[in-house]
Every structure is written in structure tokens, then in C-alpha cells.
Length: 460
Image 1 (cartoon, rainbow, N blue to C red):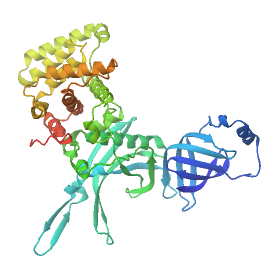
Image 2: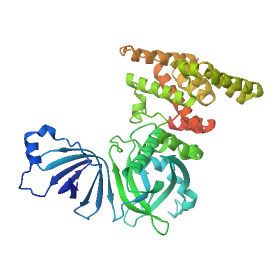
Image 3: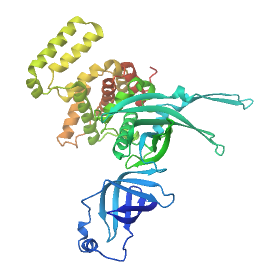
């Protein structure tokens, strides 16, 4: 708990900060009762403040540190007491309250940009003599950029080293994600960047239980170096569900697979161009199929399919009939001009355009054929291990559509087809194939990403 002083409605108050609840007590004229106080005593139901300030500023008792509170609502809890709900708050280190960078620490980042690349060592079991070599920061730093709200964000990943003479771990390694932007003293941008990073980590791990250790605000000084000016705390960016170390370290899409397109992935997440609502809470939840999960997974696929392939509805088909014919003519020319993979590429898009009123089954079947080279290895192994020797994409697609429709029509008592659980696993892989391909990831890396994220254990 943190206590201190702040001003609220031009009155001096003491505050108590507990988690993301701010208890406020007026300390002026404590022994006097005013009209507002009488109104509360006789009308306690009118306790909610309709004029909620976006920002309250206080100073803590212990160190006099300035704290900025981002308020969502305030209610009056007594004649001179109030309770504020917070979305976030910042505790500043010094007098500086503007910043142009945020540094993010999370366990998942340590294995996304793997800390192991920062060192090498030699060890002699006979003598006990060991030699550790640390790489330079220059050799481990990776940079990228993306746009958000019309501003270019400069990103960097590096591995910090913390040395200690009083610990059994004399060297602590940690991956840091730094995001730099134009100087500001407002919450909005840093909250957005933290949330985009949270979405990114959920996407690359296919689970929601991400734990941010620290959100550190930084400011560039006159020498061009960044120094810490405060810490940001955001509600709901912590999970109470932990993961095993093996899951943390191995079950994720890591940096080498995304390196050339990391900025594009961040940008699409920032613009909500990637559907992530269906991602399960934990790695164990990935194995639990419920009616709601079926709806969420199929909705995620359909949303992403529509966005990735710009599916035409019948209305848009009529509205843009002339343009559609021009596109079809262009595709026909390309089909005639090309051979091999390029010919197949143009034919697939022509077929998609011709079948604009596709059912869920049509979409799944089309996408499975589109990514057959990347997914077929995993698909056949999955069904073969469960005694199915003949696998047809059309059957997978039809079963998923039937199951989704049963649930959507309220027939939740209908038993799942025994194959549907496998079908939905395939649909999850297909979703990732579409998203990663749309970002620009090579088909080879798409296959490697799915192999790693879903623990398929193929030596690719």
C-alpha cells in the first residue's frame, strides 16, 4: 500500500493506493459539514461523480515521489471520503514527468529474443575451471520499427546483464524490449504500446497468461542516453496462472522466424487487424474444447479469412461488378502468362473471387488447400496417430461447419463428432498460417513457426 497527499476538487486530501483502487479522504475542515456532505448523507445513492477527472496527481509520504493516477471513475463513500478506480498509474523517480521511451520486461521476452545468444562458456569437469564469454551489446541488439497513431515507433531488443557479489547467481540475464517515441507526459501512448506488446506476446505464445515484470519509462538526456524516470502500472496486464518453464522456453514463435517482419506484426496488432480474442487463457486450456471455444475459434478463422483475403459479399459483387470483371480479366492474363507456383497463385485468387459467397466449409477447404504444403505434414500425423489413415480437407471443413452450426442454433446438447477436436486443432494451425503469411513471413518459416508453437516435434 502507498499513502500520500493529493488535491481533489481543490481540496487537500490523503490517499491510500491499494492495487488499482485509490481511497481518498479530505483533510480540510474535517469537523465541518457542508451542503455537499449533507446531500450525500441524505442521498447516498447519488454517490457516483459525473465529472470524473482523467488525471489526479499526488506525492507519497515516504519519498515525496510524484504519482500520476489515470482514473476511470470515482464514487463518494462517505461525507468526506471517496473511492477511485484506476486503469493505470505512474510513479516517477525524480521531478521529471515527461518520457520518450518505455522498457518492457517479461519472461516470454527472454525466450523470444533468446538470452542464450548473449554468452558462451567453457568448463573443465576435472579441474572445475570455467570460462564465460559475454557478447557485446552490439552483437545482440535487434532493431525494428512500426507506426501507431501517425507516429513512427523505434523498437529494439537487447539482453541486459546484472552482476551481483551477494547472490548465488552472480550474473542475471534479461531480454529488454525498448520502444521509443516523441516526448510526452500523457498516459495514452504508453498504455497503447504496453497493450500492443501484450497482444503480441499472446499471439506468439497462443495463450493469454502473460506476466509483465516491469514497465519502465525512460527519457533521453543531453548526452543522448536514456535514463529511467518512472514505472508504469496497468490494470489487467498480469495473470495469476503460471506456466511451466519448458512451456515458457519452447512453446512460442521466436525472433529468428519473425525478424524481417516484426514491425509489420506489431503494426497490424496495433491497428486491430489480427483477431486474438479466441486465444486461450493458458497452454492447458488449448486442450479443452467447449461450445464457446468452437464458436470463438471458428469466428477467429472467419474474421481473419475475410480480412486476409478481402472476401467479396454478394452486395459488393453487384456494386463492383465492372471492377470485378476487370480483376478477373487481369487474373486470367496472369494465369496464361505464368507457370508453376505463380500460375497456381493467380488461379487460387481467381477461384476465390468467383466464389465470393462462400460458406464456412468453403473457406476452410480453400485455405487448407492454399497452405497444404505447410500444414499437410502436421495434419496427416495428427489423424494417423488417432487411427485415421485417409484425410480429406473437404471432410474436415464439413465437420467443423456442422459442429459450429449445431452450437449456433442452440443444439449444445449434441455430442461432438469424435473427429471435431482434431479438426479444430487443424483450424488453429490454419489461422496462424494465414496471419503469418499475410504479415510477409516465408512459407518455410510459417511451417517452422507452427511446428514450434504447437510442439509438433518435426525436424524441419
